Length: 189
Image 1 (tube, rainbow, N blue to C red):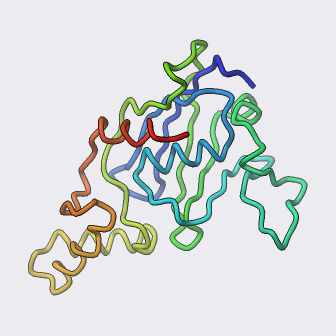
Image 2 (image 1 turned 90 degrees about the vertical axis):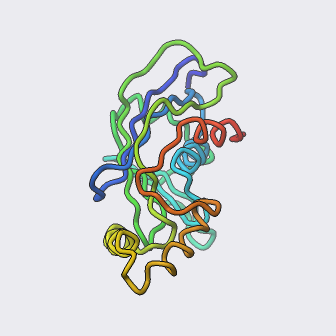
């Protein structure tokens, strides 16, 4: 584990076109629990669903109190990103097992100098993530069809429903503002 390393990650939500993605710099020496928090902030997810990280030889997931972790399962609060990113150039991150938002994480580069204040930084990205609980990729496609047709009888209702994810703004699938994302990332402890 190295606090001097920085990982440049490209994180893309799968099964959505055009792609919704973020490119972030994250410090080495952090746990997968903290990486989960970084992904939540980078995409603006609201962090009220379960998650896991899937690698070819293991998975990192929260432990169910009723079942011990299997030998290929690792605890996100005790597993450091360096341990797995040194062996694997990519993995999957699943958020919300109902909607099953699969994010591909690619380690694009490992940089040998630490981040200022060890705070993660979003350096690029595109598009707003889907609303929470929209029903996965198929539900999101339906949602977009409705909000792109002001004559649809569900138009107003869907836009109002999505305000929970936009802080009151009208949902715009193309919206991405790097400075807003970085303000959220700076709040992560």
